[in-house]
Amino acid sequence: MSAALESLLHRAEGLLARLEAVLPHAPVPPDWGVSTAFRARRRQGMLCLEPVRAVSRIALSDLQEVAPQKEKLLRNTAQFVAGRPANNVLLTGAKGTGKSSLIKAVLNEFSAQGLRLIEIDKADLVDLPDVVEQIADRPERFVVFCDDLSFDEGEASYKALKSVLDGSVAAASDNVLIYATSNRRHLLPEKMADNLGGSRGEHGEIHPGEAVEEKISLSERFGLWISFYPFSQAEYLTIVAQWLRHFGLDDVAIAAARQPSLVWALERGSRSGRVAYQFARDLAGRGAVGEALPGLAIGDNAPEGLDHV
Image (tube, rainbow, N blue to C red):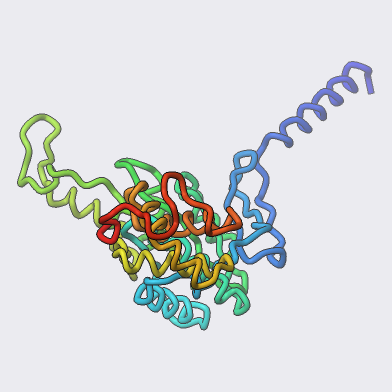
């Protein structure tokens, strides 16, 4: 072999080695025994499933004032884990009311029975069919979880999710369900113009009714809707008490924290479960309930009218 040919072959081998490093590889399955929850993450252009090392330990008993919602999701998930027919679920409604927490709690409730969770970002939903195919032959039951889901018009991931839910020529795998949370019931922005029989101008819809149908078609492919509503003051205080008890405070301390918790909610403009949890963490982290919140003594010196916050 001539020196020139040998040099050419050596250079070609080097080029092939560099190409192999950048070309996409088949996704490597995760170690399914490491965790009960996994995240879909893009690595070198491929969507890979990575185990979550520290899974949220929230329990169903930690979630208060959402009993009807809890019952519906528990029933649907129990059917799914048992191998019976079950629905994809869309949890919608007020912010901070426990939509995502309920899904995490249900995972912890059924993980010993083979339930696993895969969290995927909205931007990666275009690869959802590949994720479903990767887990189709697994013995576990998988919930694909997409949090805070909403779309702008024309997003590619919108079409991909529609296809996986109901619409692809391929039958859906019976070991996968999709649980999604959103503050929007129909997942897409809805405009006043959608209610008009027609609109003038070059960009007006000829068939506005069909545009409305398109906007609600995705949410309708979820077989079960679970709605969450803003909490009343009494419900908010019950949740505050639950979280303070969770952090080890006694009944006397919980009673003393009533007015400060209302001030906390007033400052944030919301009486949500998330706000209640944040208040409890702040108060418990101080190490002493007797320490006042900024501008407020715990006890009888709270501003008037807080009972109506």
